[in-house]
Length: 471
Image (cartoon, rainbow, N blue to C red):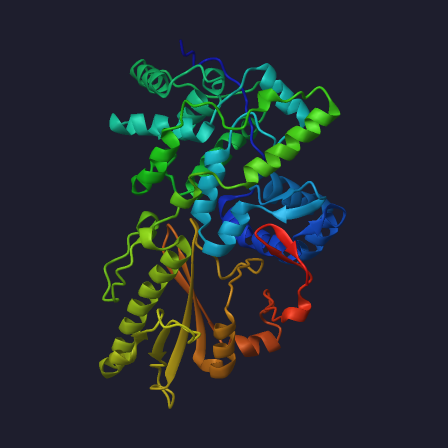
């Protein structure tokens, strides 16, 4: 029988503030993509040198260590060390680098997170094993919220902390989500208010790990927090149901199968966990974030490309959404300047090889009013809005060869519209004349791909149907 008074402090790796985590993700991905594969012996120095430019001067080594090992490594699972002694970026990082879908990135983390796990020191892992901890915390929590929602009940952070995330019976897999909801209802009827308090400890000791776990679910766009109440984001019901289907199923990674009394067993455990946690879950491809689940966007006059999400990948979907949004914005902007010019705003995103998505007009007072404006749209999704006044804020985008050539060719008439779909609002950062900004050192354009042209004299071996042929 579920006994909510049996409490147990089960922490996760400490992260940063929610907005900082949204801001740090592209910086981590860029640094890791630039330096990996990297020999394990060189990784520490390579990461610190590359990442330090995103931090205030004089940042301590302890802070750099925290970014490298605790957050990007353990909490986010963005890289792992392979058998060959090299550090590689994880599948999760590769996917984020391709689709710029931060909520989907955090959904996959939440889906694979479990207790016990390999993110913490061996003494903590052994303590949790000795206490019989075995739970998928986020799946269980979402199932409780789903049951509560069906009863028109909304839970506070304090209730989630006490009855779920700090409950020994829940963490041991002995309680069901229905029992938890029933206990909360009964305590409410009896006017019993329960809270977590460790004698002699500050409140942050009891609540920081709980707040951070709830924050992870909000970064994943699965819950909405308002006035200390946590509600399901029902626009993400498809993803939520994938979680809740596994609410009472044992964690996928079996920590209990390892002999942690030996050095070899511990090393194998941590190695296997890093590989497991960094790899994408089997649900990852279905965790893409619809724009409508982040923010309500009014219908626009943008053309409707009828290709469905099932017919394309998430990278294309987010690109289409961004292009449609910018197209509608440009039509309205140009129309407000001179309605006669609005027919010159043309969506060309499906035309290959141009190097831009939308052809518009300058539509500003002066001699260039009717000159062509070339717009390349780059979209991303995140929970929090970027702050243009944050001097340490950072972002990265990828351009194709054709896009870079178009930028050089059209100069100040070429514009990148970086679209941020966030829960708060839709924001567009416009960057003009990136070729000149690169020359001036304002931006950093880095070639990231090589084309290899070769003839027969470059071939060392030929294998046909498994048989080596003479060359």
